[in-house]
Length: 167
Image: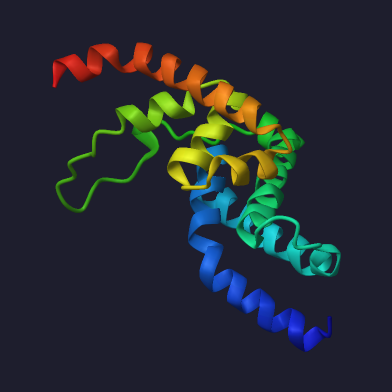
């Protein structure tokens, strides 16, 4: 693949998948700036490795696998482990207008799942990948993906039962 073809492919991939990858990375890293960095790193890795992409999986699945691995690498870094990225309420600036937070109970419940269950939920239910695409993205058998989805569903049902009945 020539550099011109790689550039055209990268521009198309960025236009098509950047938002989905950003959401996925944010879900992993819980930080918008780090998520943006992870997406940039994902596209850089894809650019370098696009000649090795064998088209055995969909482009989206391949990019999401790169993004997941990039996020995992970032979470292993010394910066991520030793930096307190949370700001206390007293450190936040005054708000300029009234703010009504959205109910993020379900999102928090998903993010509190163990990583093996959170991954399949994010890819299958929140990113809309099929079971087969999720299995390819995570390098797992399809049966394992469905088993983890069932387990995650039971865990979420238990975690959200009180919230649901309070509505």
